[in-house]
Length: 234
Image 1: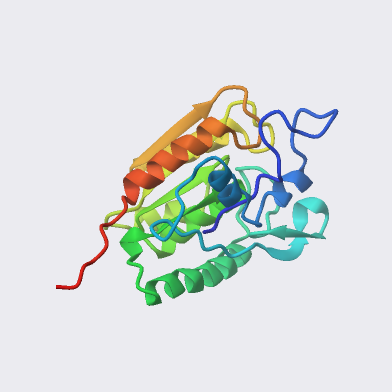
Image 2 (image 1 turned 135 degrees about the vertical axis):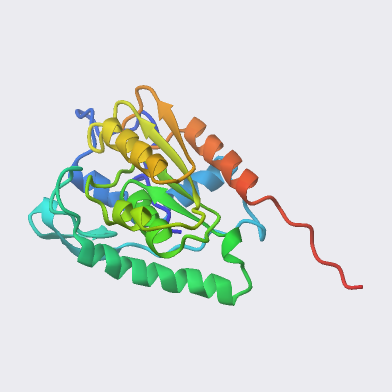
């Protein structure tokens, strides 16, 4: 939550005749739970101790596709890191995802036992949600994701004095849709603003997931959220 799909692709399964994902492919990756399914397929944490609630992205006009409707977490003016954020659509989605977090808390899950994250736009969405509105969560993961240079996340963290969720990042060096340098810059800025971060680099990986990445994510989730012993009645 929010967790993203990889467009049903695994490493090496890109569309014939292209070495990169198109903007349409990035937005296909934006909201149907594929990272969650991929984790399950590769032995990700499952069962009552590790639940994966998910809210899909919304069908909305998407500016990089000339206003065509697409399932995306939020709108962008363009896919780059040096333009303003479409903060109205970002904040609208943050309100919807806050409802999902509140549902979990109302069901007895402490916020310190909740991780959020996603792939591509889903990772950016998770960083906005956690570092601006829910700084008491257990952690955030962002796979092939970035924040804009003037992100509202950075502005919020400049004013923050409390403890922050840990960030787990992964990015492929061959990603030519969301450039590796954008993810690396995001990591460096967040670290300078007090976030405990890790950035796992995957040589020759495009805008996609691979098995090693999912295994690293799985290990991090288990470390952050160890299975709690069941309570016994005295």
